[in-house]
Image 1 (cartoon, helix red, strand yellow):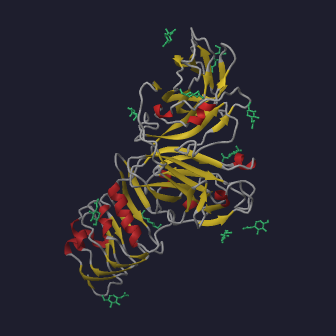
Image 2 (spheres, helix red, strand yellow; image 1 turned 90 degrees about the vertical axis):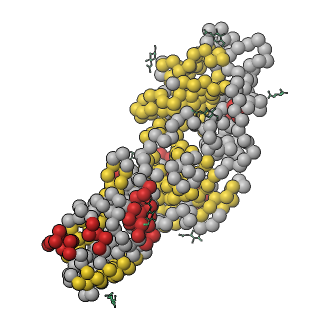
Length: 510
Ligand SMILES: *[C@@H]1O[C@H](CO)[C@@H](O)[C@H](O)[C@H]1NC(C)=O
Ligand SMILES: *[C@@H]1O[C@H](CO)[C@@H](O)[C@H](O)[C@H]1NC(C)=O
Ligand SMILES: *[C@@H]1O[C@H](CO)[C@@H](O)[C@H](O)[C@H]1NC(C)=O
Ligand SMILES: *[C@@H]1O[C@H](CO)[C@@H](O)[C@H](O)[C@H]1NC(C)=O
Ligand SMILES: *[C@@H]1O[C@H](CO)[C@@H](O)[C@H](O)[C@H]1NC(C)=O
Ligand SMILES: *[C@@H]1O[C@H](CO)[C@@H](O)[C@H](O)[C@H]1NC(C)=O
Ligand SMILES: *[C@@H]1O[C@H](CO)[C@@H](O)[C@H](O)[C@H]1NC(C)=O
Ligand SMILES: *[C@@H]1O[C@H](CO)[C@@H](O)[C@H](O)[C@H]1NC(C)=O
Ligand SMILES: *[C@@H]1O[C@H](CO)[C@@H](O)[C@H](O)[C@H]1NC(C)=O
Ligand SMILES: *[C@@H]1O[C@H](CO)[C@@H](O)[C@H](O)[C@H]1NC(C)=O
Ligand SMILES: CC(=O)N[C@H]1CO[C@H](CO)[C@@H](O)[C@@H]1O
C-alpha cells in the first residue's frame, strides 16, 4: 500500500522539546561531553563484560573504549550479554549500536556476532569491511518499548572467533508520528539505507536531525541548488531534517532519472520505503514538475506533482531482492524533469515477543536473592529461543512460559526468593548441589511441579509442606539440608522412593 503525505494535512508537532535520548559510551568510566551532549559511562546499565581501551587512534573519543565480552565455550554459545535501560513503556525508540574494533582482541579481523533487542534477533554484527577501511560501523533500528526497560544484547554465534565487543549504544525517543504506519507490536524496522540525495558532504545527524538519525551522502557531483529553508518538515510524519531538502538529484530536461539505491544488493525480504521530495521552483512560475516512480519496473506512484512545501511517499511493506533501481520519469504534462531529495529504507523484521511478565517477575526475584546469579540473567529470559537464560527451559505457546529451572551445581550462594511462587508454569525445579540457605518459600502456587531437587544445599526452617497439595509432584529430593519439622504422611505415601530427606536434615522427623 502506498500513502501520499503532503503539507496539505498539516500536523502540529512540538518542536521546542529537546530530543529525549540516552547516549552510552561503552567501556568508559566517566561522562564525556561531545557537541554539547552527554555520553554516560556504561556501568549503570550492564553488569557483565570488561572495559578495554583501544590503542589505535580513533576519530571520536567515544570510540576509544569498548566493553568486551568473553567468547563462550560451545556449551554456553549464544548466551547473551545485555545492557538494560529505562524507557517509556509503549514508546518507540531509535536504537543505534556503534562498533569500532581497533584491534582490541589482538586479532587482525574483528569478531562477527549477533545483536538482540529484548526478545527480537536484530541482526548479525559484521564490521570486517568497515574496519578494513578504517571506519566504525553503526546499526540502527526502530523498536517498541513493551516494558519499563529495554535490553540490547550481544551474543556469540557459530561464526564468532574472538570476544564480542561494543563501542557505543544510543536510544532516542521518537515522536509519535515517526514511522507510525508500521504496527510495532508485530514488527520492528532494521535500517538498511538512509541517504540525502545530491549531498556530498559528510554524514549528518543531530542537530540537523533532532532525532539524530544518520543521513549519508549519495551521488557526488550532482547538480545542487540552495533550497530547504522554506520546506516545512513538520508536515512530514517522519519529520526528515530540512537539510535533506537542500540538495537533490535531478536530470537536465525531460529525461528519466535512474538511481541504483540502495547501493548494496538486498536480501529477499519485505521493506519499508520512504522517499522525500520538494520543489523550490513550484508555485513561482507556470511550470509543473510531476513524475511517475517505478521501483524495479513496478509502479510505485504515478503522476506525483511536487509542491514547494514538500511531499513524502512511503510504502509499509514492499518486497525487494537483489539490486534496486528507482526510475523517476516525467509524467505527461510535466514541464520540468524529475528530482528527489532523500530516502529511507528499512527491512521489516518480526518482533520476537516477550516472556510472560509474571514469570519475569519470578525470575527477577530469584536473581536478586541469589548472591551470584548466572552472568547472562539479563534481557528476556526465554527469547530469542536460541539465547534463553542459562538454566531456563521455556514453552513457546500463546504465552511464553518458564517450565524448567535447572541450576544444579552452579555454585549458587544466597537464598530462594518467595517470588518463585510467580513461576506458576514450572514443571521442574532443580537447584541441587549449591550453597543456598534460608528457608524454602511457599511453593503451593506451583501447581504444575513434577520434580523438585533442592538436595545438597544449606536450607533450614520447616519442611516445605506446601508441596503436599501439588497433585503432579512425583519426585522430591531434599537430602543434605538442615530442615526441621515433620514430613507430611500424604507425601510419603504418594512419592515412596522418590522422596528423599536423608541423609542430612538431622532435626527432621522423616
Ligand atoms: C583506559 O584509559 C584510561 C585513561 O587513559 C585509564 O584510566 C584506564 O585505566 C584504562 N583502562 C584500561 C582497562 O586499561
Ligand atoms: C598482543 O600481541 C602483541 C604482539 O604479538 C603482544 O606483545 C601482546 O602481549 C598481545 N596482547 C594481548 C593482550 O594478548
Ligand atoms: C563478514 O564480512 C566480510 C566482508 O564483507 C565477509 O568476507 C565475511 O564472510 C563475513 N563474515 C560472516 C561470518 O558473515
Ligand atoms: C501517524 O501520525 C499522524 C500525525 O500524528 C496521524 O495523523 C496519523 O493518523 C498517524 N497514522 C497512523 C497510521 O497512526
Ligand atoms: C561537492 O559538490 C560541490 C558542487 O558540485 C563541489 O564544489 C564540492 O567540491 C564537492 N565536495 C566534495 C567533498 O566532493
Ligand atoms: C523563503 O520564503 C521567503 C518568504 O516567502 C522568501 O522571501 C525567501 O526568498 C524564500 N527563500 C528561499 C531560499 O526560497
Ligand atoms: C525492466 O524492464 C526492462 C525493459 O522493459 C528490462 O530490460 C529489465 O530487465 C527489467 N528489469 C527488471 C528488474 O525487471
Ligand atoms: C496528473 O495530476 C494533475 C494534477 O494533480 C492532473 O491535472 C492531471 O490530469 C494528471 N495527469 C494524468 C495523466 O493523470
Ligand atoms: C538438570 O541438570 C543436571 C546437571 O546438568 C542434569 O543432570 C539433570 O538431568 C537436569 N535435570 C533436568 C530436569 O533436566
Ligand atoms: C542446622 O540448624 C540448627 C538449628 O536450627 C543449627 O544449630 C545448626 O548449626 C544447623 N546446621 C548446619 C550445618 O547449618
Ligand atoms: C504477578 C505476580 O504473580 N506477582 C506476585 C509474585 O510474587 C510475589 C511474592 O510472592 C507476590 O507478592 C506478587 O503478587
